[in-house]
Every structure is written in C-alpha cells, then in structure tokens.
Amino acid sequence: MREDGAIIIATPQGETQRTTLQCCHCGNHFVCVKGSGVQRGFCTLCNQVTCGAHRCMAHFPFEKKLDLIEAGKLSLGEL
Amino acid sequence: MGAYAGIASKINTVSTTVPMWNLRGATARRLKVFDLLIGCAATPADQASSFNLRRTSADGSPLTAFTPTKLDPADGASIASLDLTWTGAAEPTITGDSDLLQIPLNQRATVRWVAADGREIIVPAVSEAGLALLSAIATSPAIHNYCVLWTE
Image 1 (cartoon, each protein chain N blue to C red):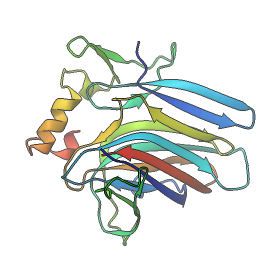
Image 2 (cartoon, one colour):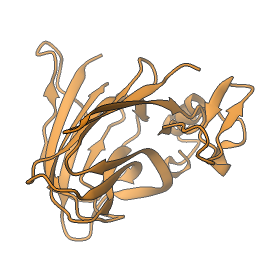
Image 3 (cartoon, each protein chain N blue to C red):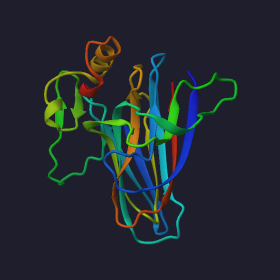
C-alpha cells in the first residue's frame, strides 16, 4: 500500500518513524496499526483506503467535496 | 505555486474552542499543508500531550497573526493568515468531527509530520475556511513551538 505521509518523532532515546495513510473521502491522515482493533475501510470505487468513520463509508471523493464547497453547493461544515 | 512557512509559540492549554493557531485561507487558491513540526521549549519533563488538527469554517475576530514567510523570495505574498489570538470569545468555529491529524506527544519529544507529494491536507478556496491545531491533552501545559509549511 502506498504511503501518504510520515510522522517522525525524535526523542532523547532515538528516532521513531511511522507512515500515515490518507482517507480518500475526508482527507484525514492516520497511522494504521495492525492489530489495534480500529476499523478502517476501503473504497472500491476510489481504490483507496478510508479512515473508517461512519460518514466516510459511502463513496464521496474528497476532491468532489472540495469542488462542491468551492461552488457553494455544499457547506464547509460538510467537509 | 508558492510555498510558505508559519510559526507560533503557545502554551498548550487544553481547549476544544481555542486553538494554538488557525491557518486561514481565502477564495483565490487552495492551501495545501505538507509539513508540520511541534516541539516543547520548556524544561524537559515526562508530560503527555496530544494535538488535533481540525477544520474551521469561520475565523472569529483575530487579534494577532503571523505573516507567512515565503520559502522562495521570488514568490508573491501568501493569501493565508496564521491567526494566533482572538478577541474575547470570538474564536474560530471548529468543524465538529473533522480530525485530520492526531499527534500524541511526550514533552521530551519533537514531532514532524510530512505529507507525500499530492497527499497534503487541503483547505478549500473558500473565505474563512481554515485549519486549527487544538490541544486535546496536556498533563502539564507548557510552551510549545509550532511550524507549519504549506503551498498555495
């Protein structure tokens, strides 16, 4: 799976790095931890991961949301 | 497309309404945040903190702001404003359920989040739209330094 970002944490004990994935429906970046029990999703139409939030279950691409908001057809709160 | 930097220093007092900063865009172009750094300037101590990056739909009444610095001096001025303080109770309107990035942190640590090319956190080209960094957890609030980089 392609990485969408990275978090680098520097401490006196050393450096830790984790990759982040981005939800294709809301733009949220999250760290995916195998076995954490947090449910994520996958949109077969976007062919990308979703953050797992209920509002991101339906196919509604983030880019489409941005276009609708900029056209005044969707409120900012819907993003 | 220009790239810009904004910096801030603020005590990470926990609040769901008063952010550490609010990066406010404008109608001319989208803002694309690609880098975020957080570190603590206080005496090192084992204290827990957590920061949330959330969307805002109105900026309230900003009192002080950081003027974005151009990464390339040849670029034009940024359309964005990094608002730092607000008058009275007129803080930015935080969009509920809009967490974009959650960063738990020990006070001894410094964290950097960086987006892959094309996977930035985007602020739509709408008046008053923005991104706010909120302090969600702070076992002992202390002065923290923030640096955010974006393109537009």
